[in-house]
Amino acid sequence: MVRKRAKAACDYAKQLNPALSTWFQNKPTQARSYAGKVLLTVKTSNSATSCTLAPEESGDLTLDIGTALPLTGNLAFLGDPMQAGVYLAMNEIYEANAGIEVITEWGDSGDASNQAYSTEIPRLLRAGSQVVIGSASSGVSLQFIDELVDACVVQISPANTASAFSTYRDNGMYFRTAPSDLLQAEVMADLIAKDGHDSVSMLVLNDSYGTGLASAISQSFKELGGSVLAAPTFTYGTQQYSSQIATALAGDPDALVIISWDELPDIITQIGARFSSRNIYLVDGNLMNYSDVLPSGALAGAQGTYPAVDETKISDFIEKMNRYWNAAGLPALELNAYGAESYDATILAALAALEARSTNGANIAAKLREVSGGSGDGTKCFTFASCARIINLGGTADYEGPSGSVDFNAVGDPTDKGAFLIQSYGFDNIPYTTGTG
Image (tube, rainbow, N blue to C red):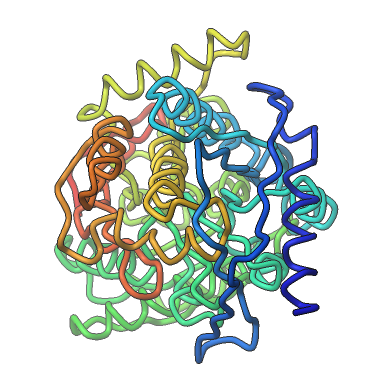
């Protein structure tokens, strides 16, 4: 009884928090009583953390979502499009008038260097967030996932790809709308092999993202009959790569895979004429426009894999995302990367809350696979409004959004295998989509 009262008191305090949003709508919340109702405690075999399923809530729902997206650090260039996706979603949810609205507390995940997450995640939890959208970096998410799991708060990353999350002890509270590196590795290995290469070396960022992806590429390429000659690592912040480059090129590989973040310009410059750019392969962490930072032709012919939808096929969504973002008085977006995945993460969280009739994190987690189509027994729908209508009429929604058919599996991974783009660089050092995985 004491534990039940303590949980109810904590939830009551969260409902009374008056400052849940800085951008959208400062709406006073109504406390909900749990008097006379039973709280159930559930525990999975994957974690010692116990999460409480709250009773269904009556009336309209107000879902508190926090964001832990890279506004500073080495992935700050992704921050605006990811926030824009969340911002569009929360507006569409409000406009649908379907019995739920989203209040967003905007936060910065930072990176492993500035560690902004160390103060931002506690702030989001104090604000009452029951869902956290973020982060972009797998390595950063691994720094705070336990904090969210222990608080029984759902985490949905729009960009984490590290394979480690597929087996993480997350008590069923972690999800992602970006495909795992295990899938990207298969696409990369197939691309290298189809280009006629028999051997490969890699330059690898020494974090969970880099080493995990490198290991998966190595395994996939070997399964295709190829050989991996070397895979030297470097740490974030490194400026001289001469030793790693020498090791990677010593065996005269047919192809070179570079797994990095914003270190790529320095790496390419230091490789120079020692290796043809036409045999260089990049990944989602470094596949971007380098027209302003590298001399013309430095990346000509290089290719890369990118876990994203073909933007030419979701032009209406991109136009709308940019329009809402600009209407809020915010600077024009320079790119749209992970905007669709961030949008879908927010829509799915709201649909799960609506299906559960609860804004409690554990209740939302229990319904996310269902509304994503992962259970395979729902009615397909393509907007929040149409999916919410199905739920409110007693049906089961199977949401498909601009990032594709998410279809969460049992460990919270999306299973859409068509979610990779193949891109090639022109003489201008700009990547152009040439195919899909």
